[in-house]
Length: 220
Image (cartoon, rainbow, N blue to C red; front, side):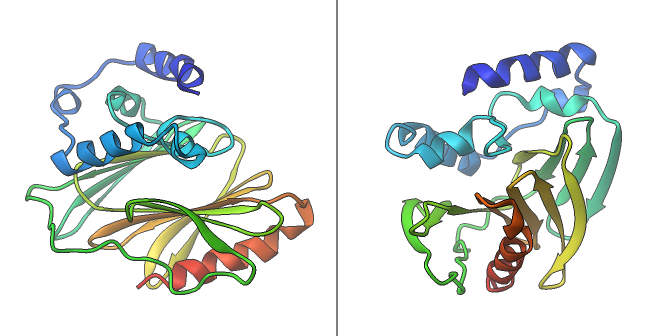
């Protein structure tokens, strides 16, 4: 899967050069520690592979050394709050979310978990409290990813996808539909959240959309 990401990274890097500010982008120590844990556990969990490396099935990349992917901008939106700065950039085939904070991570905050789990689904895998996978008897998996906001970045594959804005507990969220793959991404003042599911029957889109939204609203 890592090999699949190299041509994408190469194309974007060649198209433009890094600015001085982007060259100075530094990921937090907490973010780097979490990524090291995920890499160590990748042989144990297929889910971890999906989260670390880019693939069309998972459509998510956590940037480690490929911060230069953020240099080509078709459109960008900067959102500021008291706690962090978020830059959203939309490219031809992906959307990036770059978070940055000036202070230290608040280590006293604990990652939140969903209070609502759909009927028939049960937890089958967990990477600390960072990634949780739920599965039903039909082997359909719902994946939940969360982390404290720090100097970290996320890329979502939005090529040929339908993207719309919805609200989760008062926070703006991106709802992404790509074939039978659904994603819901949002953040509050302290955490980022991602839910995704790859269902089998094309007629179940609304059913799983409702499920993802119910799970999201139960995370408080």
